[in-house]
Length: 510
Ligand code: NAD
Image (tube, rainbow, N blue to C red; front, side, top):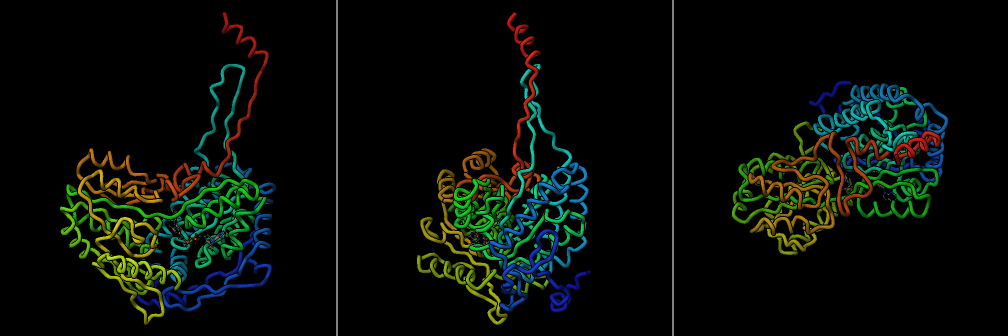
């Protein structure tokens, strides 16, 4: 299909998103027959009823994934063959870019230009990158000496559970299933309950591409039921979670209370952006700051939500931010010019508005925005918002808002800036703007964050690991070869010819 961007209503009507679970290669209802509503965040209206999976369905999906792992061809396939299937899968996803982008826009309230221009292409690229890695990674021989052969090999872990958030449904799915499948594992994936349909459609395409039944299973449902069942399942070998720090903690407990499955957590953030007085291009800095907080309506784990600016450039930077913030247009997500879509759900809208009213009460100054907008649409929109005079101890400076709300604080010395940047429970990302090379080096080493960007807002690319220090993450990283390797287990295969070892050691002692 081809997107007709001129007609948003026709666009929405042009897709029929799948709503049932995908288990063992088959589209199935939940065992209970129950369904739940998926709402359109831009209108508040129901889009579809989706199968509500619970522990029984997770059992079925884990059994299918186990059988595909133990008995199916996937884990035993030559890596080059696995690569070809994954590349075919990536090409099918690419061929369905428009359809997937529309489904994601409808269920997540994200701008169609982002879904079709960033999210789906990122998924395709991630699948291709990990597919290509399949047959280019070598195992190792240990340096153990003559008569001994220590082979250090990487093997797939087995059945991997993936529990995902709603903010980048397709991108996050790619960051998990790309390396999980490329490494030869099978997967049981639970999308966020707000955004199941685009992920189910991707899994259908995997089957169409020839990926064997049971390799990729999708169980839509709620966290407390389907998510917990994956975390507690005795036959899941590893769980990869992306979501809030609060829920991440549950997965460590689930593992401890079940089978000590491996746990990989990608969690929340409260990332700082520091602007030193010597930053040479305040306009570019302002553009990056606005992108860092307003992209995806601030519903971004690595949103640069704390601006820490040197006193002497505060006024000028704030003027530039006011100008640049006008590039971030709140609107109907199906309209191509829209750059800020809706908050994901009403409860989340209320949470973001609660932070805004708390910040006002705490004495911060609302310099830009600060309101719910487009209420007449029935959707859940908040305009780009900037607070100045934010006390670093206040709620706005410390808690993840997950909305388009920037907290601005000033500093005098670089040491103070780094202290403020590190004064957080999180450690996902950070940015520093400076022309001083020494400051750039010092700050990027001193800030405790998984990614530190210098003079730009950025998260690296597929070749660089992404994840957090402190309470932003645990156990691993998304993207890069690091992600691929974390879905494998190290095995030592030891062979020793005792006779030649003895000969060799007597020779050595001469
Ligand atoms: P969330 O933690 O509420 O939910 C994430 C997933 O966990 C969902 O699938 C949900 O159903 C499930 N879940 C909820 N409660 C559960 C429970 N008790 N047991 C098992 N599973 C449960 O997060 P969210 O609101 O979907 O996403 C926003 C959060 O995700 C933010 O904190 C954001 O920073 C984080 N995030 C992090 C990254 C990263 O790479 N670090 C990327 C995207 C989002």
